[in-house]
Amino acid sequence: MIDAPSTTLTHLTESGDAYMVDVGPKSETLREATARATIVMHASTAALIQDGGLPKGDVLAVSRIAGLMGAKRTPDLIPLCHPIMITGADVLFEWDLPETNAKDHATGNHTTTARLHIHATVRTVGKTGVEMEALTAATVSALTIYDMCKAVDRGMTIDKVFLLRKSGGRSGTYDASHDLNGEPTRD
Image 1 (cartoon, one colour):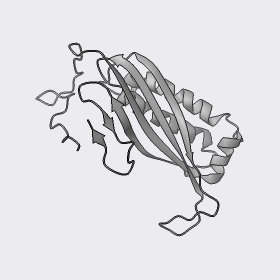
Image 2 (cartoon, rainbow, N blue to C red; image 1 turned 180 degrees about the vertical axis):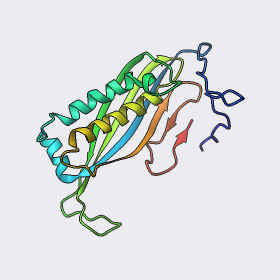
Image 3 (cartoon, one colour; image 1 turned 90 degrees about the horizontal axis):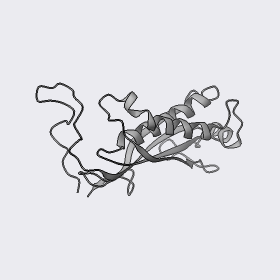
Image 4 (cartoon, rainbow, N blue to C red; image 1 turned 120 degrees about the vertical axis):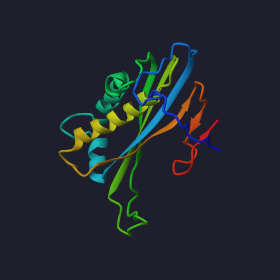
């Protein structure tokens, strides 16, 4: 069962002014967050990425580095986000390629798209979580893939950027990985 969302926003005063939350009194704990972004592209674009056939170079290697850099630069991009000592970060890729002669169940047409799921995990020992860092890493990684492939596929879309799981801190564990289309659980 999921707890109801909080009725107050932590970054607003009673009068509605934005401020940075004071995390000084909080205890340091091990915290980890994983976010996922999906980029949808033409199957031929996926083949070019896998075969190293794009003129800008190794798309996944550059995308991984960009995602890691994005995690580190999150407080420069997101107002009121605390600078955090990141102790570790990973960006991993998972292909969802069309099967030969597969059909789209909704349209009945042959599938011509491939999906690349980007999983960004960030870890810290600190007083606040790393959800924003993981979300930023996944998003920047997807944007980098778009940038490197746009010459051959301007129709790519970045879909479903979301927090997959987080652990540590006062709010405990949140996990949406058990059912990516269903309701997440919170301990």
